[in-house]
Amino acid sequence: MKILVINCGSSSLKYQLIDSESEAVLAKGLCERIGIDGRLVYQPAGGEKEMVEAAMPTHTEAIRMVLDYLVNEKTGILKSLDEVDAIGHRVLHGGAKLTSSVLIDDAAIAVIDECCDLGPLHNPANLMGIRACMELMPGKPNVAVFDTAFHQTMPPKAYMYGIPYEYYEKYQIRKYGFHGTSHSFVSKEAIKFLGLDKDNSKVIVAHLGNGSSISAVENGKCVDTSMGLTPLEGLVMGTRSGDLDPAVLEYIARKEGKDIFELLTMLNKKSGVMGVSGVSSDFRDLDEASKAGNERATLALDMFSYRVAKYIGSYVAAMNGVDAIAFTAGIGENDAAMREKICSYLGYLGITIDPEANSKRGSNQVISTPDSRVTVAVIPTNEELAIARETVELVK
Ligand code: ADP
Image (cartoon, rainbow, N blue to C red; front, side, top):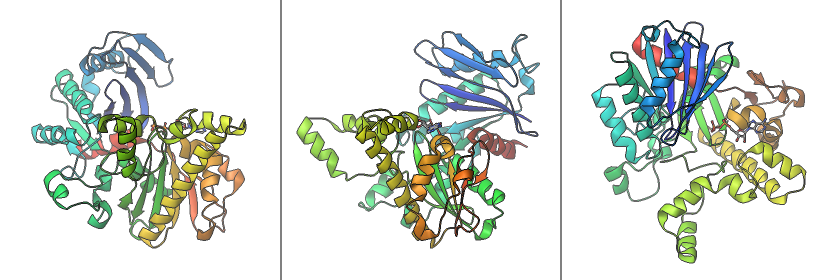
């Protein structure tokens, strides 16, 4: 089957056309600056990357342009759109009602719409992508794959907040967790790659990218994760604060006359390693600045690794043990020094890292020594492939 995978943000859209039998990417790219002016990047497998500026007032024009590039005579890799068997959409929030991927129909759209309250930046954009595909490719099955779904197996003791119960009853305020597609893909890959028994395994996945989250996966099921009602909770991230005393908000509000919306923007966009260092949210820039003697960049990197190590420790406690720790995403896959720094806190688990294995890149890799009591691995994530696989499952 040929599956078009769509990941819509508010002004951007990433896409991949995947052949589900070979799992090869036939073409990929992105549309940026939707609603502003518009730019498309298109790359067919083995072909040149093209970049064009074109008006994209809405996601519909952006998707129309992607479809045209897939079939036109010059750049196309399909004879016609009939060859696309289904479309898989990444959707941020499925709330508590959508606990696994679904074939999109009116009822699913209504629930995704209801969840706009919980994912105000993403769910509306995801819906725009879904509606555009339905309009431009009528009759083709569309599947929604939720960032929250994998975490729906968490028990109440993990997902409830210690606030009055009425807020859970009235508004479903609880931990949902995100990056679920990645945590699901990486935990499954780790179990397969490391030869673990799925039904008797304890795996911790550290998805460390621009947004970062950790999950505890026991017997293939998520039992806890670091992000919460929104992606703001948990680790110190690129620009997000992660966990902090909520009273900090009231204090800054009072001192600086800021309202709750300004404060949340500050916590989401101006905090994390960016806010602490004042340098960048990108770990390559932070490494460089730290090596050049920038103390705040060093502090930001120390805070990041310390928080990750503390979460790993808490998830070892949650599962009463751990067989494997898997690092993934931009930092987890590429930043060997950061992996080593995090693992330097984990000696009490009997973890030792092999520096040579830790320096390799690009594929599944065990980075702990053979005598390490817990196996540590790098497992590259592939959310698009995971979405394509889920889509095939639902339409075949
Ligand atoms: P997202 O998908 O959340 O936007 P990614 O998983 O692509 O993010 O991660 C992006 C981040 O990965 C960058 O901001 C950067 O900090 C980090 N990163 C990427 N490559 C490297 C590298 N070679 N060394 C250190 N950090 C890296």
